Image 1: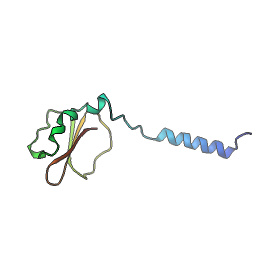
Image 2 (image 1 turned 30 degrees about the horizontal axis):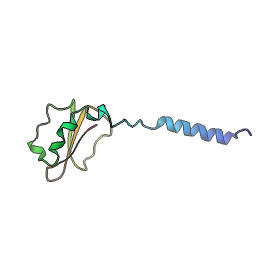
Image 3 (image 1 turned 90 degrees about the vertical axis):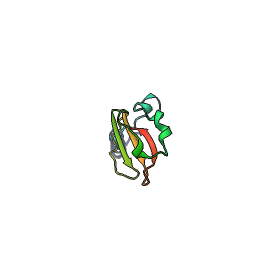
Image 4 (image 1 turned 90 degrees about the horizontal axis):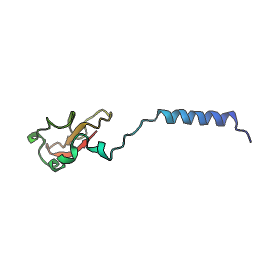
Amino acid sequence: MPYSSRTLVGAGFLSALAACMPVIPDKTGPAANACGAAGLQGLVGQPVAQQDFSGIGAARRIMVEGSPMTMDYREDRLNVSYDRSGRITRIWCG
């Protein structure tokens, strides 16, 4: 049984839509620690003001929880999130 033109248009639309979907990077494996975040996990819970992240990662983003941030993924960027009391809550690459 031949496909109707409506079925073919729908299939073409879905194929085009799938091509526009963003590629989500693999956040496991070697790239997951490209910025050195794995070695800094012991700082979670510590005051952010007492830490020096200047020599770590090619780029750094240090922000209070809930701050807006770009969604571009850089495996070499160190991200540090802290709460309103100034304590580090999360450290990750991306």
